[in-house]
Length: 354
Ligand SMILES: [Zn+2]
Ligand SMILES: [Zn+2]
Image (cartoon, rainbow, N blue to C red; front, side, top):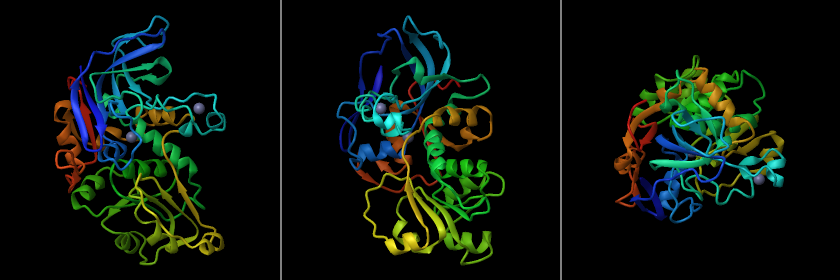
């Protein structure tokens, strides 16, 4: 089978590797149909998020069809369509036992596409607790968004807006920006989205929950949506993680700035304001207890139009094109302009039959 291997910064290859098979009694081997490209993957490839182990197969946002199961597996069978939870946790360490499975200290060696061979490949091997059967009415494309949505569900749990009427802004209309907009909307807020790329703005405008809107700038959102150029910044979810210093002094009293982009950037904030205005600065990464299943239910129940956030499906052989659509020029070893209409790009290692 083919697998997209990471060797070092800007050094990835599509390699022929032996097919995976079920070895342990609880193993489930999945023929991968779709695996989303995530900001984490871009960071790994570019060497700016140096967590991946050289030699590992990348990819962690996947769905597919069960190919083989171990002797003790009863919950799924070959031929079942499944989504993969790529974030195993030990359940025994202090982080796991204190509701922080996303920071399990034993996940090294088990994290898909980071320290464990991931799903930009023909097959992926996991265990039965980490696959969920996808109902017939849900496409495997939609199911592939479960993991990023799980990260958003986990992040949204940390947000405690002062009121359901809080003025809420999501910076960036990429996949996470749109997923945050939907999840915060389901929580009762009415977020506005800020996106300066005209094509991404167009893409987003068609795909927002009722009451939400997208604008090219924060100023425009404040003036047009809220009718006040000084509309309060009660809640800001910054998917670019670039605006903390700029927006922190502008936060309304009791306001929250949330940073979710994996971007290395030092910022200075005034701790007097932090206390005196009761401000919150929070971050979030990965999934928490139950967030994966919660995300899966949001997708399977149709409460969130996951498949509509997919802008492109690219065969595994053309992975360079998929990464380039998101601005990651692998051969040029640099970030360039993104294909501006891109949102969630899926890599397809096999047949496009779903
Ligand atoms: Zn991801
Ligand atoms: Zn643990």
